[in-house]
Length: 104
Image (cartoon, rainbow, N blue to C red):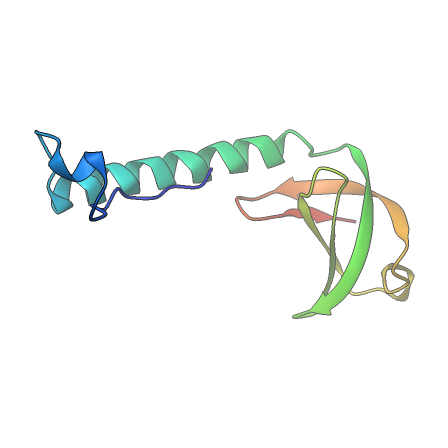
């Protein structure tokens, strides 16, 4: 999800509309949506636990090789030469987190 708070833009019809929402309410709603998005992403990633996925490993960062699945999920594995080949490699997902999946 991409979440953007509405901000008035001069010359648009929306600027003239009644019942504008105050900044505090917009911020609260935005934070709720971000929390929901994070929760949904983690639940989605957890569905891959124990499953095999194909990953194009592209870089090494902080002791992990990382790349993406076909549907652009970030996958990280402990650094290993077999993942440094910039090839698509099948790996088993161990644990799903909000921002990535940890694999074997």
